[in-house]
Amino acid sequence: MWSSTTMDERELHGKEFFSWEEFSLFFDSWREQRKALFFMKKSMPLSKCKWASEPPRPEVVDALKYRSVRLVCKEVRVSTNKMELRAQKMQTTEEEEEEKAPVGCSARIVLKMNEEKDRLVVTECQLTHNHPLCPIEFAYYFKRGFLMDNSCLPVRTTNKISKQFVGVQDIRYLLKYCKTRDNGVQDTLNALNSLFTNDPSAKLKLVFVENKVIIKTVFLLTSMMRSLCQRFPLALFFDRVEGFNEEFDLYTVLCVDGNSHGRECGYCLAQKGTPNMLRFTLASLLQSVPDMKFKVQCITLGVDVGEVEVVNELLPHARVQICRTQVLEVLFSKAQEMGVPEDEKVWPLLCKAAEAGSLAAYKKVVRRMDSLLPQQFMKYYREHWHPCSEVWVKFWAFEPTRDIDVCDLIKQHKQKLLVGFNPCRTLAQCILDLVIIQTPKEEVKNLNEDEVATRYHSICNPEPASLIEEELSFARHGTYDIRETTEGFALNDDVSEFCMDRSLTTCSCSIYTSSLLPCRHLFATRLQTGEPLFDVSLLQKNEKALMTIS
Image (tube, rainbow, N blue to C red):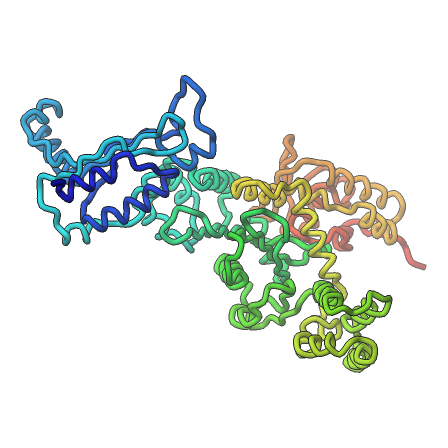
């Protein structure tokens, strides 16, 4: 009659697995039932194999991970360590000592990829131990997921750093011990290492799926973004970028710079369906720039964001607004869903309600809606949007943002993010693309030189105005490396380096020193830092440039 151990061998031998994860989950339960401790003695990763014939498909390499794996009883490791110590003391070779020493437990399991290169098969299993199995020892050493650890990174490491800010040394430590490219982790770490190489002052927070080496969330703040937070904290905008990626959602925090441009001051990439993203993003932003907490006076949220109570908790001086145009789109869609006729009255009425300039005007529009729109729709309106009208009707809007077309600002920002982007791109590529958008070269592309030049022509004499217009053009088409210094700013154009003061009104270049008019370097740096491009203080040392008003 077969013993229970022999029955185990018969059941295990030849068993097939279509992924390394499938085997890992099976093996965890199998070990737990038998209270047997094994570790990986030898392995041959598929990604490092050289193939004489046709190699496995890439998706198979990702799933199987190994061509062969040898798992042995923990007692072999103990025996081997003792042999090594004795060999060192006796100054004998490991081979000589192995002949003298006991070999330890011979229990083992061997997996190999099959000839069809589509699954792992147990080709050998010796499950008879030459020592008693100890449940107490097993409970002490057993750890679920240890085989998945061996395929990429230790879970204990990712669990430890999860939800923490990490620096360049942390990323390089993870890369050092990252064995494979599972779940794109290695590629993502390489992208983050590249970020820190180019921007050592960047802020980064990683969240891993608990007990798995899978990145769930990335919070990213470049040094330029942090500077924008410090300069323009008054009003913020938070929303999700739809259609950004098939697997990850992108959440952005915007501020409004001195040129009325929406500027990114925080990125958060999260697996689709991840909850509480406003709380996580704002908390991470405030940890990176603590001074913002009491400076933010208004935050405008996308209509689907929710979590309004989070704002009161984290930004005590901030009023909450919801993007008016997004509210209008929701209302119009709901009206169509309820069968409201698509006539010319619906959209204009909704717009009048959103743009009402006084409480009386708003109430008048609502009465008009009551008389023209179906009661079913008005019931929905009064239950969901009328009680919170102060967060989306223009009359109650925060004064500094009242004249800003928030929807247009967010729309332009999304268009900039999505131009040329492939929604199938990896997390690593998403990070690299987002960082590129933050470079001075990309920011200079946003320069509307005609609008700024027209304003200078309106106050300057023709000759200096033409010189300023020419410098604006050079600012847009030049390539500059700009950095902040203790005295102000330094700009390198690949030929020379120029220094500017902290107020960005003077420059060391010959163009400025000879004319005392704003140069391309000042304009390029102002555009990057968000300072106004049209600024009369730029002409304070050349009063002759200004027109004489009779």
